[in-house]
Image (cartoon, rainbow, N blue to C red):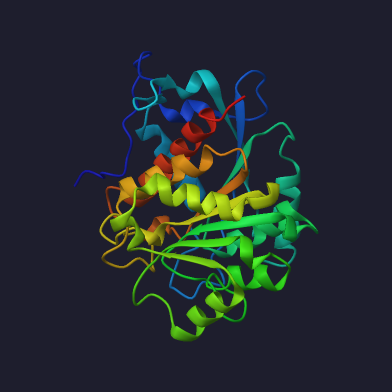
Length: 308
């Protein structure tokens, strides 16, 4: 049987793959976006492997071109994706320090940093590292089926951990919450904290861009920097079989894609992560990691929309 996950290499000079956007160091001229792998998995409440999902997402970039039909722009002419590799053993002893060191190495001229998980523990690691001692100066948007308000320390607890460490709940917006994916006690905790909750049904009533802009207004109020967490189990299970906690009835790939492009077009957004993917559990056609790779490109398309 042919492996549908393999990528045929093309030598057509007029069809460059999106993998050509990857560079090893800062590129003068185009807008620079950093890429860092934080492949957490050890504290997951769902069964998952230690496989490097970031590596699979990088490989999947070969499936796409650099041309945005919607914006009529070639990303290769306006954006460079600077690959800082993967953080070694982010779950292990000293893992948080290694994440902080990797993110500190990102050039200050970089417009945005993309973090590739790993499970949602990567969000806690990355936002803490970026904020250093100033979590109160950040806003957080999560696109997630789950509240991530569990007690303890796991991939189900990053929002609670960040709130306990000083993140202002009035600038936390949780979008895409699904029915029967959260508990009543944790839902009460989230609402009592003052966080803004936008359920999945909002996508049936409003345009995606309207929801995204409302989230940006709340998270980025008073000039705050905004971190965006995209947990891909917010999407329908049929399109993300590599997300262990995904369920039927989630968002469409297009809804997720449009949300990502809209939020990253805002200069307030300084980082975005894509989490809760296990490449080893993906389908043979690699549809989950291919969606994650597409969302990296949507991020770059969003950045190129920003005003100078």
